[in-house]
Image (cartoon, rainbow, N blue to C red; front, side, top):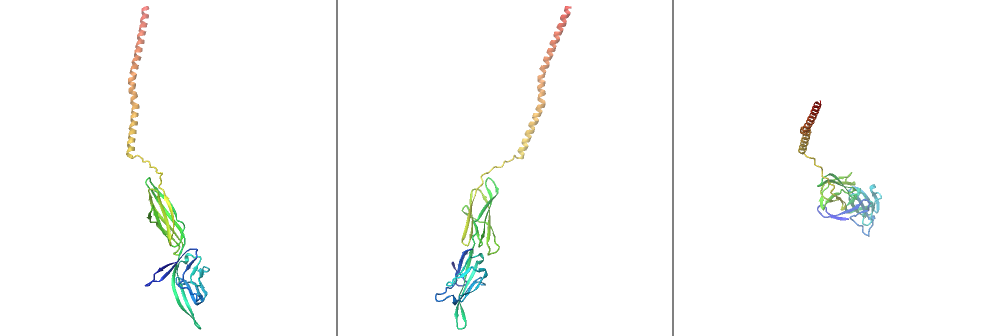
Length: 295
């Protein structure tokens, strides 16, 4: 139980009680009955939000009990502490202990207010361990664009989500979801990161003085493959022209070079044939001449 002082214009003791869902919590009252008296000499009212009676005793007997607190409350008959077990999230809020001392006269009972002071109960429900996931949206040889998500659920009250990136604080883009202000909360935080090297990230969920954290190592991808750069249109055009010129040259060479060679090579061959023919003619003439002479 913590103590805090503040009320309009003058200092007053303001009591605070804290507890976790499922535990037993005691709310201290503003009066303790002396050993010379008993609960029979008092009226004690424990109420919430100044309008909802939680438990009430008069002259030592229970006179009222809220159905929502049925079988969950008990009163210490000496220091008038209200015990609630097990506490629920709905129990969170301001309470008030009202004590009246009873003076018994001959035919009546005269109550006198002894104290009337508030006490605030803060209920905590543990959040789940934060879950961190990372998704690479785009990647290059120099860096990765990564979306990191941290989430936790089922806790109370509304938490604070914080982060540490390589020993430097980061601010999450957070979303809280709850059915009401006295219902469990789910929280999700998102971060866009440009990762250029192996990076350590911690996500923390803080609530009512408690905290839960999870860390993740974001590793820079090393399987970098440089993209093939296609040749420019100018290079393609120049290469095409060179190939076309070459093919034309080969075609022209195939047409004209054989004829030129033939004209040079065939001429000696024709001369040799003519020499053979002349030799044959001379031989025939010689033969004819010899025959004639014989005759």
